[in-house]
Picture 1 (cartoon, rainbow, N blue to C red):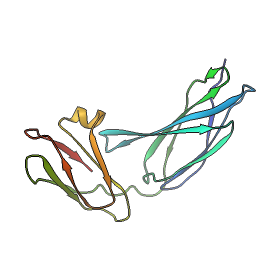
Picture 2 (cartoon, helix red, strand yellow; picture 1 turned 90 degrees about the vertical axis):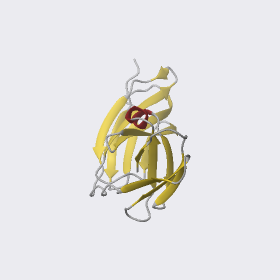
Picture 3 (spheres, rainbow, N blue to C red; picture 1 turned 120 degrees about the horizontal axis):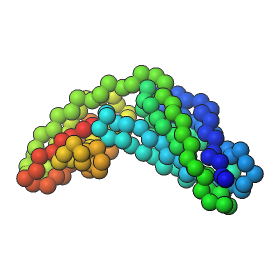
Picture 4 (tube, rainbow, N blue to C red; picture 1 turned 180 degrees about the vertical axis):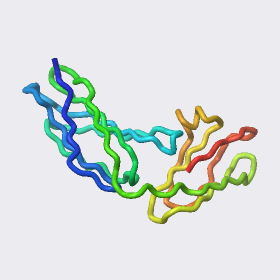
Length: 163
């Protein structure tokens, strides 16, 4: 039986998490697959996937949000097959940024100008969909470091926007 890998949180800050991966077996490991999950504003679950080569590994994941719960899951790729998943949870330090105040204004039937307030020198994600279900599961999205963006939409539809 292949055991799950051990995920150990080495350190964390307000915008990064460092963790190590190792196996407690003599089975040859060729690498790991790591998923980092977090929920954005209770509507949208985000995921970042890392494919890591080698047996032992210390990884640092940056560009995270302060005071946000993250779930890290990992499995090992071995000579005998894939291991079971292991999980850890960690909350980044610091104070969570204030949610931006979004305004969306139709420019014409297929373009919407979105603008918001918030800190400078960060990356914003703009998510939009025609229903809450679509907003959660598979929204359209764009990223920008500006405080506004024009998005193209389908005519004769109502949209929900989230930044």
